[in-house]
Image 1: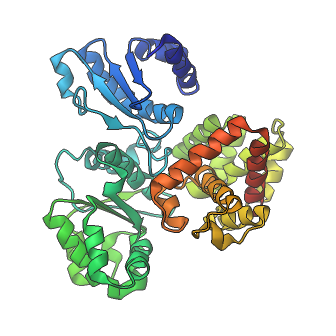
Image 2: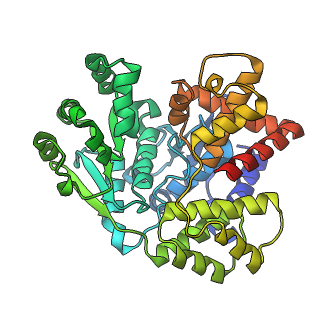
Length: 436
């Protein structure tokens, strides 16, 4: 890797680390980059450094590498000393640095304290996949406690070691629709399709209450994944024993594994969450304003929606916040139901702008205007909602995740090369945020 490129990467890292931190651990690294292979080789000065690096900075460093290089790149760690074998990543072994389920969903970004230390620690252990110890692994907790974040962090980690294609991630509703939509209620074909996955992630498991007849099929899937030592991770909003609607056979199987419960984020966590979001989006709130938000709102999802409003204000009004601005934005939000941007809103907004039928954006039409609108809609879903590439593929007509990845990269490049495209993206963001 040329010294110039290393310096450019260092400048990127300065957004997340201080100069003193980079001097301590980044500057000693040997970096060799191959553009044709999309590969980065990282060499350590000695084995003990490698061990420290793995525990202290590796996860966040890989997240920043993904942000710098983009998707599709791999890296390998090199060390001349034998002690480095203690590291989980074997020397010279290439691994992906992609985050197919959202780059924000990592263990490092999961803000916690002693209350949720055990769920976080066990989730990290599940992600290591040295041995399948906890199967199934079940995360429960109230809305806004961070359940989905935690299981997406696991999904991102296992995707690096294996591949995104080895992971099924969806809610019970997604799984039910796959059976009855994609496979026209042919349970044998649908079951065979799901059997191909190495990991089964099911979010919002409590929705099984709506599909009581589907529980027998879940028992079949459970038996196959358990017998073949394939990992299952479930997520639900209440403690499992309280689900009286569960089939006794399914309930007993779920209890074979480990069930952890996430506590709602307390004031300390909410303050750290707001501060982290403001650093990433460069929103200048005073300490008093941060505390005011953390004390008023206890749900992290609701907080995210409010912070998105502050981000939109900063981007489009482009001036510093006064106390009056702060209170005015809150007055438009406080006391209202939690409201997040839905993919349907983005699709409809983009379709209206380009004067095309919104069904065409999720359909097969290849007209230039439709393709351009579809790519922009994918990009906005990724930017404003954080949709994963597989989720984007499913949302836009069951396309492969690589199609979504290509669309995101193309729109980013078009923005860099074309001022008009950058203005269009800014305008569409504003419209989507306004419609919520």
